[in-house]
Length: 270
Image 1 (cartoon, one colour):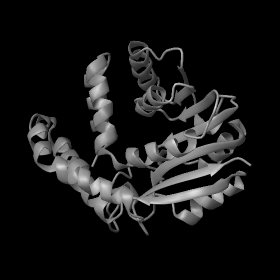
Image 2 (cartoon, rainbow, N blue to C red):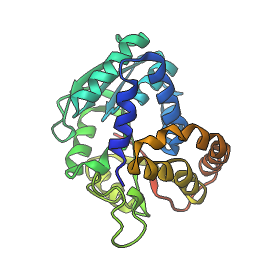
Image 3 (tube, rainbow, N blue to C red):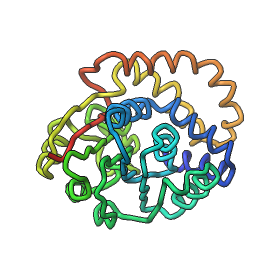
Image 4 (cartoon, helix red, strand yellow):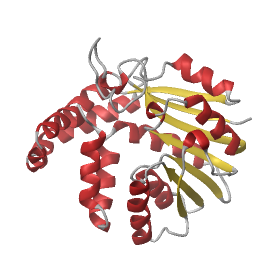
């Protein structure tokens, strides 16, 4: 099953259009449970910050988290990087329309050879590390560009069925991901080896979140992979399943998961 190509099609559909892009971003934040965990982690870090804050959005993609932070936290200045120029062009165009062009800057950057110099108070990495083979280089670069006391937030699949791999021989999203996911021990060791102190590691997509993922993301993606014409029927489908999916997401983030297919890691540079 292809995931990023379908998401990119929706991104191209709203390119250059202010309100459709805002609606698209709102839908990403609503449907994707990882966004619930990421926003919670960002708030836990920024709520106590005073004065100006510098943030690196490492692998910004469509730029939805950079936009969300800019809209919620006026004192934060964001530098967003991605390896794909097309993503940055779309995000920059929207930022200009939204009036955040003085607070969000963009550049093409490879996280394994990170050129951004910092120092930053916060580094955010969402749905990125599962795409990068040389992850330890990236973690060392994150450490380098953070100031003392600075925080890194990483959201990535876990090894408990992350990347939608459910059994032997099931490729899931493996064509787009270089690893199925991280174990708690693996990502902890790599971050501490880079110099970080782990503050919190949370499992997401537990029992409730996994059900929500299947009905709100996986099944629609399977249909869209068959034919994009199914997009015409999605509004009617979501009218039926959306309340249940949101309740399941709320339960997942409210209850402590002993395991799950997603990880949210918060660590700091001492």
